[in-house]
Image (cartoon, rainbow, N blue to C red):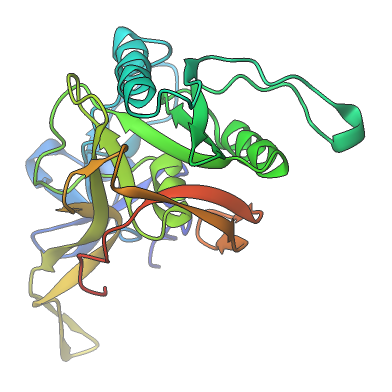
Length: 282
């Protein structure tokens, strides 16, 4: 009887495939000498986790982007550096850090406090510096509130070090931002001022080894091809973009739905870089 695979990649995973022969292995029968293992849903490498307080399972081994946590020094420095450059570039734009935007029930406004806010060419622009602990509902709430106020939103993700060239597993909020900005996420590095690094999440693949066996007297063979990961992505870098000259406002970014992540995002106003798509389809 074949094992039941977990069709939802982010739930606890009890079954993986052994890369050497592509055979399903239950966590109760897995041994480290059988590694490497991979997830049959996403094709990412997984490792054995033996636990004391919870059920043994396979865990994803893919790296994440090196984002800061909570209100870290990285987060504060990102806000202050960007605000200082924008205030100098647009002296009449009244750029401020954490300026409160007060509630107005008659207009449907709720109180929000954007990380950075000001005006460019008479248009209100809000820049939010994403901390890894900020949930998707809060991102959606703020995006909707700025739309109601007619402001244009840019989400920036500060990193503690270079993202690098190797494949990684974007977090849910990164996948969301990638869709919001038509296939790009804006990363910021310490000391970059108003310079952002746009990154597209390109596909990543793994080679599925050939394995053969006999079943009911007949030889079976699988593998021998490249398989695209579902969650692992390869960074594809665009040209560095300066907030003072390389970005534009876009009104009424259409509603979109992330089927795999079960997320629906209302119409919004965004602040996006002007460069053409730099990646190939796929």
